[in-house]
Image (tube, rainbow, N blue to C red; front, side, top):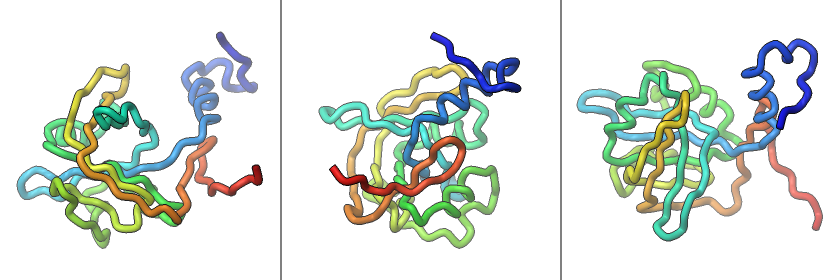
Length: 172
């Protein structure tokens, strides 16, 4: 199946695909893990997050195979997926870029597995690595959820067509 691409995108299939994929609204997360000895924690913004299974409790996310933190995250004994709330745009932008100072001034709490969990996150899923898979230009991480928590009244941060959006309820 193929679709028509707007003028200017027809000659760039990857860009056209990315534009079509952008039609799927996603939540925004920051995946965190303890850093290697003497290094700051790992943290990166990720929008490719999904539930996989309730029994066993599994979630997945994917990381670009050229991400600076990929090796350290692959070696981490545990990590957390922090689902961002609507007021976390600045935090999402901060962790979306490579920076040695991304944790400067950012509060976090150690979770049950010792991983950094972000206070005010809409939800946090602490995971042990379960499996990884080759996903083309990404690595797919499947984690077993060991602990989780949520803020039921907070609103999510959503990414759609290349920008952040807020969710509004529609009457049934």
